[in-house]
Length: 288
Image (cartoon, rainbow, N blue to C red; front, side):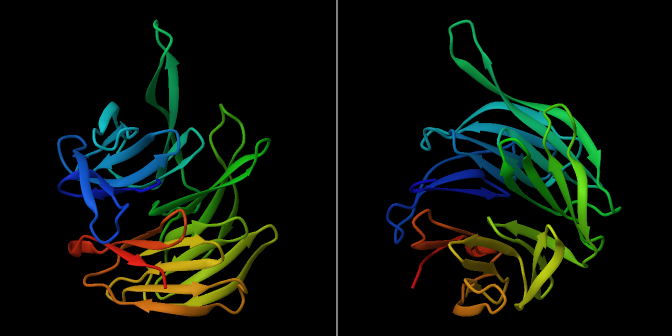
């Protein structure tokens, strides 16, 4: 968000890092989740983040308006430990350790003095159609009247799409792809991307079909921005592909990193690539 990068660390918790000078990033503050590290993270543009604990089932709502003073405003226990999470509007979906997804809402309750107090409320869990375990999550808006789509990667059981349209009804399954082994999903306004071992499968769901395969060495993290696909490829570093012609993607960069590129993001202006490089910390790469 802006010049602040938020990073989860399995020992130190949630970190707020000033990246306004990419050559000298500065740690502004950090906060532990459930007394320990942090694992999954989702950020709300209204100044809040939701983070899960590492090695516990805690989920915390964190005020990040002042990145120098991160503050937990609500904390709860998920049904089980959280493997991944995604936020869609005021909904937070948790891939808990098992064949279920837990649904939370971010609620702002009015106080006696007229201010609003944010809190996390669990709306329950739903069983995943297909029999797999939720490994990765992504979400895409449809429109205001139709709600949003939740995409669930479930390993050997493939990928399943759920639609959330009504406030008091759990997301409902409406499409699936029998693809093995899906470990990560991402989306943009046109396509869905499924990371499968050494390939990325590009999908559309209406009509349900696969558009193409993009060959890569390994897929740990995905980010799609402005017709460019960024791939965190473990020990193979970072791959950057031009996907303006989705059926004929072109690799435009291969960037070696010191460690293993596990997850990836891109600055709002597209000038910098942020890579969580396993034990070699945060790598900031200026886009060529």
